[in-house]
Length: 160
Image (cartoon, rainbow, N blue to C red; front, side, top):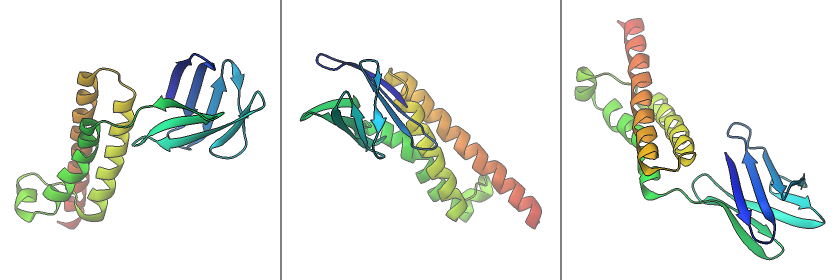
């Protein structure tokens, strides 16, 4: 997640957080901040602190000022993010529904749904248009359910 913010006092602020490792880098007006810890940075003799995450939004606290680097997730982003998890938990734990369209449920389905939801939220946060966010949310839900279907079919072929 890479965010660019124009600030009247600090100039261009670039915040980059790796999705996989969580490593954060901060650049303020072209000067790369030195990491003191996971959330604290030193740049131009000023101590800065970054707080937040994908759900709550990310804020930069520097010299008593708060700069929003990333907004918090909106209600529909959260709804689309939990959709794969809820679908797999409900559908995957119903024997009658799984006879119609088998998907893995339980711990495997929950883990897959949770992973799909996090990836969905990450992709939606990178989009600016609401329609694009909705398309990515739906596509990730379909992809997650399709993977759950493939796993269910593979497991059923091993058993039967």
